[in-house]
Length: 324
Image 1 (spheres, rainbow, N blue to C red):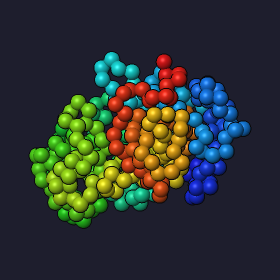
Image 2: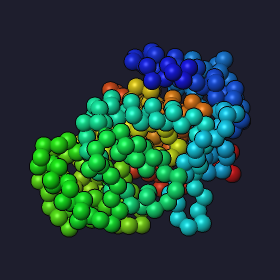
Image 3: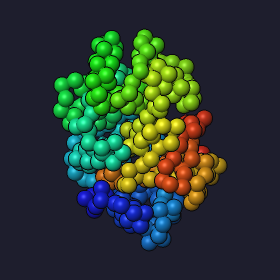
Image 4: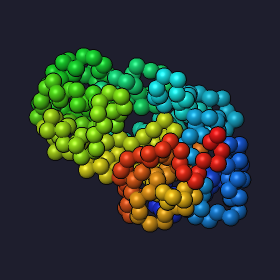
């Protein structure tokens, strides 16, 4: 089944795979099974993806969400304030994560070897357990270019390198957290022609929060680019969505976004509608592939989606049966 996940091409194949993964996780994931039992949902009653229960994302903070008895190879952790409980994603097969992000990037952007990868992820580099750093570090290695690398405080060196590479015609992927990219363009203005500027979010505690349009307008002006790209990922997912501009994200074929009613978290919208973001990530085969996040957004008809913000309160209303 795991090999089939990355060979999905149609909606029918996705649905068939999702239903199989649901049965697997219902049977092998004690936390998820208990959640489904509380909702009186059994695989024998489920024939569409909209009937599958979505586990509230907070469970990754309080439970070991596992659908495998294999040894844990890697533990990814979320960032958090001092003393706060962080999410933990226990990964029993690191190759699934590697296949997911490599194939996902190639699906949208082509061969990573065509790029120099410049990473500006200071707050992620300052802690252990970041799945984003693991992914970008692999991209840097896969690019097989000596100019690729991480940058922490040496932004002047980054600016010089970025300008030189871009002017030479080299394709560049500049991936960074929002506040660090803003810091960079405040120190120097660019006129980039061969560079993809990709923000991964991340303003918490570093700068005043900006809405996406404001953030992208500042970055577009500062880097001299027509669009700013974005990556949508999180500790609890092994797949990523990508936006090539205007905040519209697309999923790789093994990932799908649906929305839930904001007042009744157990009601899943079957058409394009604003609501809570629920993610189906089939790469999460050994944890949980069906997650109710704390993001608010739209699932659009062509498998794309947009993120509008987050719920004001920390709990997902109507869907916190076992969080405590």
